[in-house]
Image 1 (cartoon, helix red, strand yellow):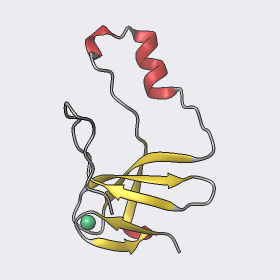
Image 2 (spheres, protein in one colour):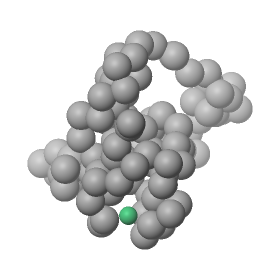
Image 3 (tube, rainbow, N blue to C red):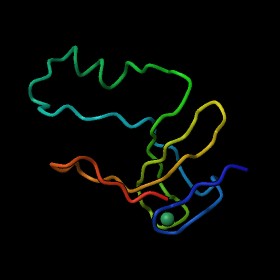
Image 4 (cartoon, rainbow, N blue to C red):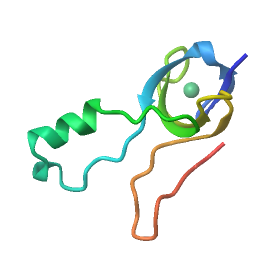
Length: 96
Ligand SMILES: [Zn+2]
């Protein structure tokens, strides 16, 4: 049974959550991208095996969107955390 730890509610069965896809960094200046670059950013996925950061939504709980680092071949959840904006010193994470 796959279990995820919601940053608000704690460990829960994966059936309480909705997968939101792989998380990708947003372009620093979105206005600078042309149409082709937007298509590549939104639709062209690498589909690799290994550790990836994903969006998850707690549908049967608190309604929080959060991030989870998961190995997509073993299904191991390495950590879950709230999204935090990057700071001058780097990204901060409230991981579980
Ligand atoms: Zn929750």
